[in-house]
Amino acid sequence: SESAGEPRNIVVGRIGRVGTITLDRPKALNALNVELMEEVVAAALAFDADPEIGAILLSGSERAFAAGADIKEMAAQDYAAMAVGDWFSAWDRFAGLRTPVVAAVSGYALGGGCELAMMCDVLIASETAKFGQPEITLGTIPGIGGSQRLTRAIGKAKAMDLVLTGRMMDAEEAERAGLVSRVVPADELDATAAEVAATIAGMSLPVAYAAKEAVARSFETSLAEGVRFERRTFHATFALEDRTSGMQAFLAKERPTFQHR
Ligand code: CAA
Image (tube, rainbow, N blue to C red; front, top):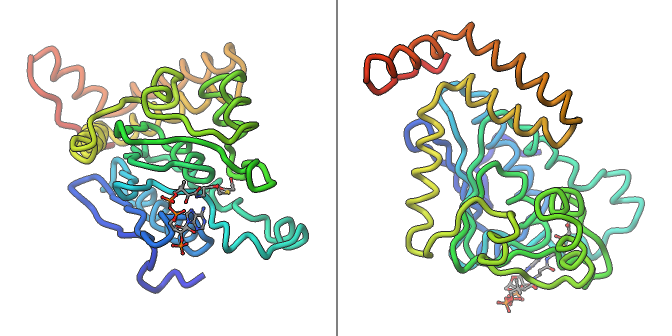
């Protein structure tokens, strides 16, 4: 849409090789309206196209990562508008990013907010985080992948519980269930997530892309095909200068410095 203008619902920045996107729509607890979605997707795709960016850090506010898709915006829609407009399909481009994405989740991650967090690769949660798929309480169901990604992440038993009752799950339960990578005290969230993103961004860029792609592949394919894919990709890293220098650095007892190619 208005891709030329300044984004109005997010703040975009960069720290070294980390591209940062902060959801910034506090009056609606970062509810994901169409404009915000287009801004996040555009910012993420721009980072993805930039070889100087090795990781993306996505965060919300202390009170809410995102409280879901925008209910005010959806309330007036009908079936034809949703289907013909293919609502929320733009998020598939976020899920298809090659650059690793670290999510820093504090407060509410509900509905589309939980779904957005699950599209990220490393999910760091504050102990204040609350996850849920409350769509059923609104008379609808998840629409940005929640029924699929939640089930793959935490299994049928808990996914059914959350999707059918709409209840929230706290950070401790989310970690136990395998939804989040790490839980940290609230005052350590930003620093931890930034450090994880910087660590990833320091790796060889083509190798980080390959590592993300290999893990992501496991959600799309059989074990045998996935292992074949991994093996071929592993072999392919031996064409990279960064693989040569990485192993040489280890043998010389030095820290590797990757050229990201
Ligand atoms: N959409 C639009 N506005 C939202 C919103 C949402 N998802 N979530 C919160 N807001 C707005 C509220 O309407 C309120 O605005 P006003 O001040 O103008 O009334 C403001 O944000 C603050 O929210 P509350 O006053 O409700 O704050 P609270 O602390 O009392 O409650 C909450 C917080 C429990 C998160 C509550 O806001 C809530 O239940 N939000 C909706 C959660 C939800 O159902 N999300 C799923 C959306 S559907 C979806 O995401 C579909 C999909 O999968 C594609």
